[in-house]
Image 1 (spheres, one colour):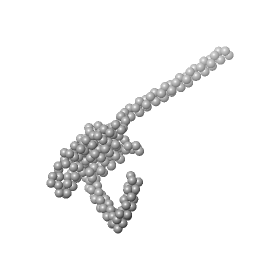
Image 2 (tube, helix red, strand yellow):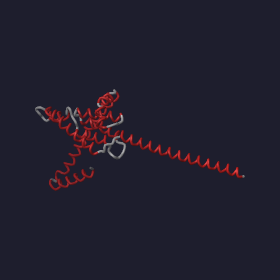
Image 3 (tube, helix red, strand yellow):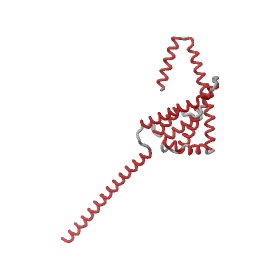
Image 4 (tube, one colour):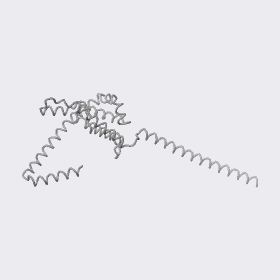
Length: 232
């Protein structure tokens, strides 16, 4: 993506130099000011919501929410650790309330606890799809933007938004299930345990065989000693 954005920026600036060279410098300055202002707003929003998440965590509200959503999350993500389940529950609650800025930090923390290797797991892929679809029961952010824009009925999008986001999430989850093999951590554990049992059984059999061979050699040597003594 870095290459894509670099090429797009370079091409845009080259075109701008030919079309309106007198506005090139002003575009640079305006873009920098907009980026800095947007970054400061995001920092403020994330500070507020991360503080709220910390308070909710210390009040055990996150754990209660995770237990409430545990049956659904078990179907979606499989067997995951408790800390990841807590952040996923926060992420889902934020998305349902349409607070996208609050959903992002919890999703980042959840994916950090779900992924331990270089390959994206099935649970991580499902979390990405759920966040990309953004299932919203009450799209508060969009309703606020519509109200600021002067909409006569800013809440008209409640039902269409909910239906469209749910359908998008369902299709995405189905595609993830089709893309990943029918194998989860539980199945892998059973397979590993079976393999481990087979290996252990093989080792025990080999050890028993070695002991039997040693006993046979000792018996043969004793019988030969007795024969030699008798002959002498």
